[in-house]
Image: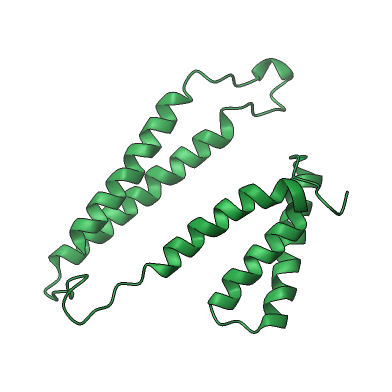
Length: 157
């Protein structure tokens, strides 16, 4: 377990450093009276989070490596590896990319979240309600508050 943590944490830490260095010359928009953070803010926040959590994963792996318990080896005899869940996520992401421009963000996101929740054995009605509420929250946050254009689709909102 420790080796996987080192690799994963190292990838995220390296990605955080790369993003931070890449955004070093992005404008900050100080000339606007300091009211606008500029295009460098979000990538740097993301890079900082990647660095922080990457280092946390490395520390977790270091602590796990020092413990006396030996975890079972992944893919050992008797363990069945499940590839369905990662493949389902990839298929649903591709479906979102294809269907969102035609059906719209609200319909597509609600359907995909419902499918994922039903896969997690949430009852169908409950998954539809929770998916609709979460999708509306995300839509309101991004489309209305942050003014990020989202695919309109069939509803025409």
